[in-house]
Length: 343
Image (spheres, rainbow, N blue to C red):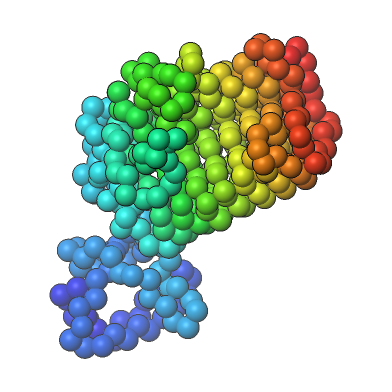
C-alpha cells in the first residue's frame, strides 16, 4: 500500500467508527490529508501530502470532507494586508463536502476579480467581488465575531458572491468599512449592490453571520431558490444617499428567514420584491430601520405571492415615513402574530 512516498502492508484503519481494509494499486502515488482523520492516525500518513480526494467504497465516502485553513494559503488576517487572493485560493481548492476555515482575525478584501458572471451595473460594467464560491456543497466557517472579513478602503466591490448551490456560511462577520468608502446613490461612488450576494443559486444556508457597516445591502439574493438565513444580524448598512436594506430577497423563491436581527439600516430591514414567492419571515427582531421593517413588492414584474410574515418583533422602523410592513402589488401575503410598536 503506498501512501505518499511511504509503504505499509496489511494495514487496517478504523475510520468514522467502521473498520476498513484499504487496498491501493502498487506503484501509484496517493496523497492523503491528515486534516480529516483522528489524531492518533495522523502519524501514519505522509506529512508532505496535501489531500486525498474522497475515497469511495460503493456509495460510502469513508473520509468525508477536508478542513482547509485559509492561513495555509497565505492569508494573514492583520487588518492591513489584502487577503482576498489567499482566501480565494483556499476556496478554489475545496471539493464538495469540504470546509474552508477562516480563523480569528481581520481579513481585508480588495476588489478581487470580475471573471464570474454575476450581474452588471446599468452601464454594462461587471460588478466585481472580492471572493467567489462557484462550486457546490462547501462550507465556510469562522470564529464568529472574532473572524472579520472587511472590504478595503476606497473599494467598489462585493465582499462575497455565491453562484454554487448547497453552500453554507457560518460564524462569520462581514464589515463593509463604510467610513472609508465613498457612499452615493447606486450605482455611483464605491457602492456595489450587496456585501454578501447570492446569484441564481439553488440552496444556501447563512447561519450565525453578521453583516454590518456596508454602503450597500447587507445580504442580497437575485434569482435564488431555497435560501435559509437564520440566527444572523444585518445592521447599520447604508450611508447618506446609499440606501441599503438588511436582507434583500428579489426575483427569488422558497426562502426562510428566522431568528435574525435587522437594525439600523437606511432602507428596509427586509425587502421581498421583483416577483419573489414562497417566503417565510418569522421570529425576527427588526428595529430602527429608516424604511419599513419588511417591504413586499413595489417593483416590476411584481406579483409576489405566498409570503408569510409571522411572530416578528418590529419596533421604531419607518422614520422616513414608511409603515412597519409595506405591501404593494402583492398577490398573497399572510401577516400574523407580530409585535408591532412605535413605527
